Image (cartoon, rainbow, N blue to C red; front, side, top):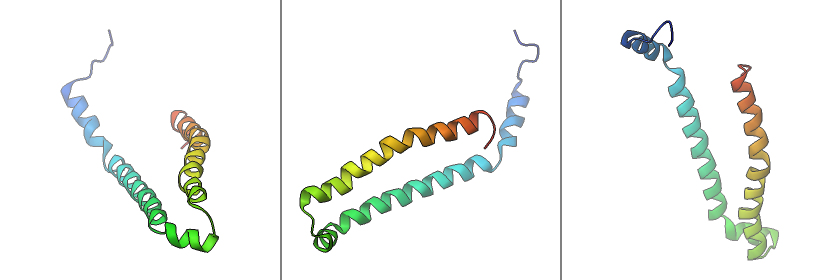
Length: 93
């Protein structure tokens, strides 16, 4: 058993100490998600002008939209998450 059990007032005071920062982080994450979604949609809207300008086929365009995107996030997502996660765990961030 622990020597200092957490009481309701302790839990309430810890909840009040959290403050604005978690909501700021949520806002930044929502903003990043929105920008990412808009970026993907812009490319989808501009498929025909891009194909005409670059003289590429439908298959090549689908590779640009799907495969390149998936490979980028698959190959770089894990190392970036590891770096950020390590900094968060060890308190360096």
